Image 1: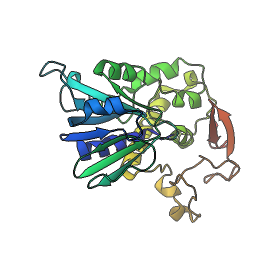
Image 2: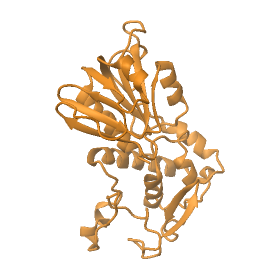
Image 3: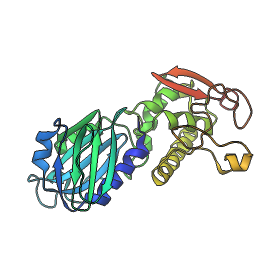
Image 4: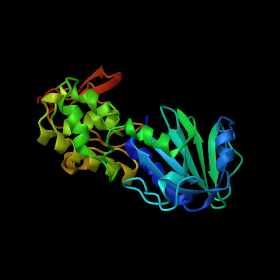
Length: 289
């Protein structure tokens, strides 16, 4: 499942191509035909992400002029917008193209296009037309997103610091912290030497602040380069004289999907186990506190 940096990249890419312009909308597959018909030829005002949720806002007819916008965003008053709510899930993906849209290929749930750009959404878990109130309700169920300007790390800390649940499970709980997935979960815990089975309430505040700051940095870098790289400069293949990672997901990592291989730092065998219904990876020597 795509992690938060991917969704923020998509929001940026949708906005760069379509924001401020009337957009043609269709559903070649047919599953979003009613929603697409309502928004066809309407102007997209903005695109934004919260965690793994993508929201595309189109100018509607409700809401008073000058109504306040959503914190950390810009554009038309939030109350005037109708929203497409997208969650890619395990199989969803978006492809962008330049110029007039060609004949659709495959099961295209949503196509947006202008004379200059087109974007096709395939296989999402969710693609629905929602109101502003419904968008706020979705966001209200999510924890703070480190990539958003309005993120509040204290809100996540309050939940983490009171919980007996392992910190590894808490990092994947989107109601605690939005946008972190399995890769960032494993890697940030390694980078800070934290045992993934440690209860959240046993973390010290300064440890949490360091984890939050690091996640913000890693996610922003993921948005910038379009992949997950988590190794520090002194631990890159070039710096250490080791072979680069060979993996379909790309990016250099410390422990993710490296069970049974030696730790880059200490040589101990990386372990793997299932936790919170996801595969967990860690170094038992480097992550002892």
